[in-house]
Structure formats: structure tokens, C-alpha cells
Length: 230
Image 1 (spheres, rainbow, N blue to C red):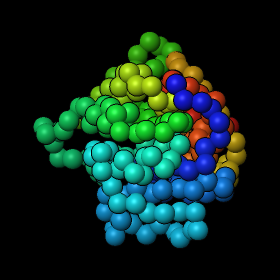
Image 2 (image 1 turned 135 degrees about the vertical axis):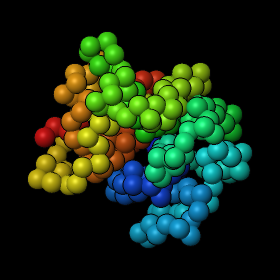
Image 3 (image 1 turned 45 degrees about the vertical axis):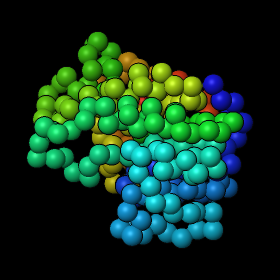
Image 4 (image 1 turned 120 degrees about the horizontal axis):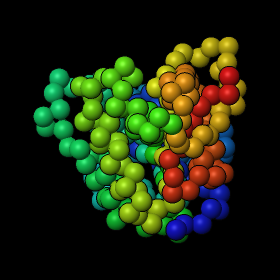
């Protein structure tokens, strides 16, 4: 496994999405050089910054990102196969995330390989012994294939030699910034109570947790939930 020395340069795969943009913004104040990897750079307008560089690339083709990966010692995996739920999952590859992880592990050659991945609330284990996606009142059954792809993410990471962590937001993720925005987050190990798993969390709060796990790693080879302290 890689060392836990501070990261100096980080790549964000999926930097154009809502989570990716928030994470990119949260990383820059730490003095890091950030490589924002986008499949279609011309469709995204990231705020300019002297330590931010936009790189065209596709997480599903890690071999084409070899030079970018060699230049970084940390990676944030914030990609999603679609920006909105598809009409059908008939052609959806359940190994979408697992294949990306395997490709990164095979391609990334660096002394330190810290990977922080964005998780999905549907995969969280509850203290009732069930998984959140099994409760139809908490997760739409029609989106089960997407949750299953995220579930395969974990064993794929465990099969690598990456220094990895999966940070999973609760079901109420993405709420607008309010009076509680900016308050400290907390990391909680599974299993979670139903109340914990369904609480709210802003993009800003979540992004701060990801940035901290890049700069000062505390979670290794594990998945944890990110909850608000509000």
C-alpha cells in the first residue's frame, strides 16, 4: 500500500459534475495542483485558477490518462455513467465502476497512490441488517442496477494495492446551502441508523470531507459515511 505522506498534485475524474466541481473547489485552498479531468472540456466552464489545469480524458480509458496519472499522487473518482437516470438499464454495465478501478490500478504508476471515491447512499448498510437500496421507501427500485454497480465498486477497490477510501453521502445529499452550511462534517462507520442514512448534506460539506481525506488521510481500505454535524 502507498504511504500517507501529504499529496501535492491531485486529479479529479468527473470534475465537471456537481460533486466533482465542489471537490475541485475544495481542493485548491489546500495549495494542491489540481488536474480536472473532463470527457468534454468545452462543455464545462470551471473557474480559472493558477493551480487548476483542465485535462481531456475518460475514466473508462485510463491508458489514455497514463501521463496525467504519473504526475499525480492522489486521485478523486467522481465520475457517473449518466447525468440523469436513463429510460432503461438494459445496456448498462454493472461493472462500470469496477472496470474503472481495475484500469486505474493497472495504469497508475506512482510512489503514492491515494484514491478517494464518491460513494452512493443506496449501498450503505443499516443497523437493521439491511442495505438502504433494499427499502423501496428510501431508494427507487428502478435505479437498482446503478446501486449494484456502486456496490461492486468496493470489492474491486479491495482487490487493488491502492490506498483507497470511499466516502458515501447520505440519502439527503445535495440539499441547498442553508444556515448549517460550512459546519464541520463527521465520518461515521457502518452500520448506520435509518435516521443517519437519510439525513441531509450539502455539496460543500461533502467536498470538504473529500479534500481532507486527500490532504490528511484518515480512512484506509474502507467505506464510511459523511454526515453533517448540524
